Image (spheres, rainbow, N blue to C red):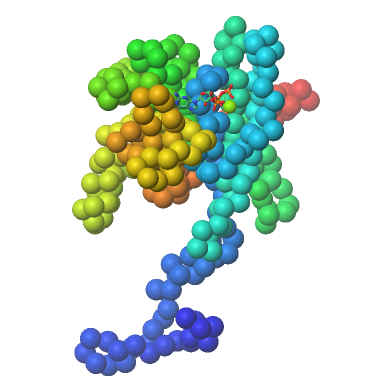
Length: 324
Ligand SMILES: Nc1nc2c(ncn2[C@@H]2O[C@H](COP(=O)(O)OP(=O)(O)OP(=O)(O)O)[C@@H](O)[C@H]2O)c(=O)[nH]1
Ligand SMILES: [Mg+2]
């Protein structure tokens, strides 16, 4: 569409052959599209869970970048006293002219300390701080260039070794559930056989239900979507919690170079759908549900935060009034 035609009222032929004035609001989706493409998109993803479950490896595998090139490995003694240390990495990705500013919030070492009481506190505090910052920016004078650092999704890593959720997993997810979209993952799925994965998934799903944990719910598929999309949506919902495998090495499998883990007995391919749900997770995050995750963050979690802060502000105002 050239600039001229965009601004002109173009006459169009109606069904009866008569020319009808074309108002032009049908171009609204195009206008929105242009504007958002120009502005670019941002998305913040957080990973959390016990130390050593492969969080950093998975986010590296997801976005093909090595986020921890100069990471210093701590020795065993240091690790025991290690406190939760949250790090933020931003990568700018561009695909077909669409820019995405992706921020990964990594929480290395969670659960490393001997005492895990309230180990989720630094993480919930971090999420609240981002809301607070956004709230302040939004109420400030210069609202044009607000940087949105709110966390849109938190991948919570469940260890593959146990029998379902541990109390710390339940408490952790519950602490997060009203602040962020929690997506539980079964980590290091290469440690389990397909039957064990199925059992583990059933167990985790049951326990999520039993303990009333509010994890991210995939929205219902629109009835006018095509059959293929509906089928993919069904498969996606049935595969939760996703069982994932991460790897930062490229190996040779079936004559191709693939991201995988090489064992004496064979190769586990990260992007092979019969080996794990990595591709499903990536598609969900990037292709199909990114916008919904952002919407829920804004409409539900941020609104929760605003509600609570507004109440606190009112209480302060009332207390101040009584002080006079
Ligand atoms: N078997 C298996 N090992 C994995 C997988 N992903 C990562 N690892 C290995 O697990 C170890 C820990 O991986 P990290 O990615 O550093 O784990 P992390 O959760 O980020 O650990 P912290 O930063 O200490 O919280 C490394 O030796 C990885 O190679 C996986 O899917 N399967
Ligand atoms: Mg890590």
